[in-house]
Image 1: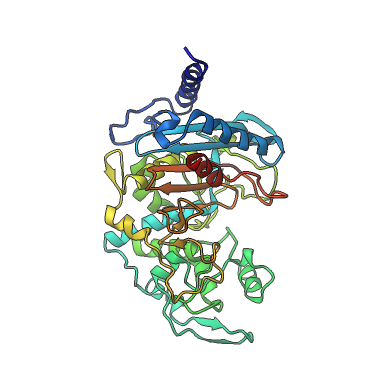
Image 2: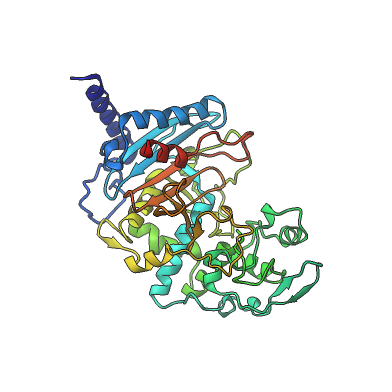
Length: 419
C-alpha cells in the first residue's frame, strides 16, 4: 500500500468517525425523506468535487495558518456535490476560551446567510399565489404608500416609483443599513429610529423605516440594506404567521434543519461558536425581532441540507420545496443597464439575483458560468457552483479582524481546481 493510499484510507476513517459522532447515522444518497436522525453528510473522496488530497492539504494549511495567527479559534469547511460530501474538514475549537473541537454540529451566527433562505421562502409564497413580485410593499405594509426620497441638498421629495416585493429581493428598494452607514445623515436617522433593535418586531422596524426618506428612487440603484428584514415583515403579513414559524414550516422541517433558528435554547448554548475578534449577537434570549436579513443561526450540517436542495434544483431527499424553473429565475442577473452599480459590492463585476449574489466561477473570466450564494457578517460563507456541480459551506466566527481573516475559501478552492 502506498503512502497516498494509506493517507486516503486514514482520512476517510477519521471523517467517518467525526460524522458518526456528530449526527448519529450516515445516510445513503437515496433521497429518502429527511428526519432528525438522518445525516446529509454522505462521505466521498475529494475527487468527487474535483479536488485531490494534495489540494485538500493546501486548503487545510491555509485555514490552519489563520488559526495559528490568532485571527480565528476554529473553522469548518465542507464541499459537496449533488449527493455526497467530498471535503469535510474541521479545525481548532469553538471559541478562544472553549476547548470543544469544531464539528459539523457547532452553531454559528450566519447573519446575512439568512437572506437566501428568506428569499427562497418568498418565491415559494409566490408559487402559492400568496404574493407577487410586482406587488407594492404598501399592499402589505400601508406605511409604504407615501414614501419620500432624500435629495442631494438634504431636502426630500415624494417618491415617483412604487417600491415592490422585487425591489426588496434585489436590494434596489432605496433602503439602507444604518449600522453600515452611521456617519451619514440618513444613517443617523436609521439608528435613531431603532432599525438595529431586537426589542421590536420586524413589522414595527419596517414601519419606522418607512417614515424615513429613501436613499434613492426604488429600482434605480443597488444598495445593501434592510430590504430583507422588511421582506420578512411582508412575508409575515402575506402568510399570516410569524417569520420563525413560517420558515420552520416551509423550509426547516421539510429539510430536517433542526438546528436552524433565530434564537438558540440554553440546552444548545455549549455548541455556539465564539470569535476572538469583533462584537457578535448573543442569540440565547428570545426577543421580538425575527431578522430575515441577518438573524438566523445554523450549523454546517443544517446549511448543507439547504445547499443540497439548491444544487438539486429545488428538491432534497425526495422533498421538493421550490420549482426548478422558479429557482432558475432567482439566479438570473437583476442589475440591468438602468440600475446604478455605484454601491454594488463588486461594482461592474458579477451581478445579483433574487436574494443571491452572482459571481463568475472563474474570477479571472467575468463571462464564466455564474455561482450563486452569499456571506455572513461574522465570516460564514456559502455558494453553489452549478457548472462544476458542487457547493461550499465555510463556517467561522470573526468580525473586524485586524488585517482581515487571512483566508478566502473561494479564492483557495478555485485556485486548487484551476491549477
